[in-house]
Image (tube, rainbow, N blue to C red):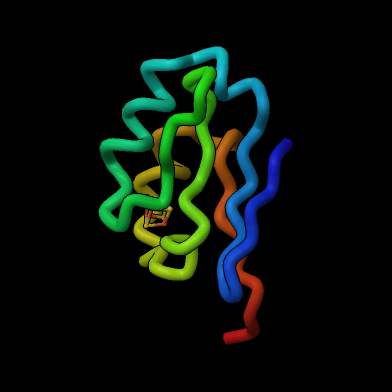
Length: 76
Ligand code: SF4
C-alpha cells in the first residue's frame, strides 16, 4: 500500500494494482483532474500538486474496487 497525501485528500493504492498495467493506464486516462501517472516501471503513482483537485467522482474507485481508496482528510 502506498499513500500520497494532499492537504485535503489522501490516495491509497494497493501494490497489487501494479500487476495490471492496463488498469493502471485506464486510471491515468480516466481521472478528470490528472491525479494518476505512471512511474518508471509503469507503476501507478500520483501527481502531488493535483491531489487536492479530486472531485470525489468515484471513477477510480469503481474501476479498481478495493485497490484504490480516496480518503478525505477533512471533516464535512
Ligand atoms: S475520485 Fe475522480 S477525481 Fe478523484 S482521483 Fe478518482 S478519478 Fe480522480
